[in-house]
Length: 61
Image (cartoon, rainbow, N blue to C red):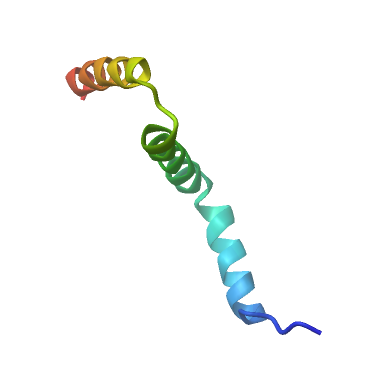
């Protein structure tokens, strides 16, 4: 039988953190997806559109 890689206490702590920080986890997941898209799948047109969106967002901040 395979051994657990983390203790039960660590699993509980992770679950508690995840439940308490759903918004932050969503932010990290979205950021990771955006970066992955840019690095691996974006076309030249996608990159140009993203540059425009980034410029608009910077003006808002």
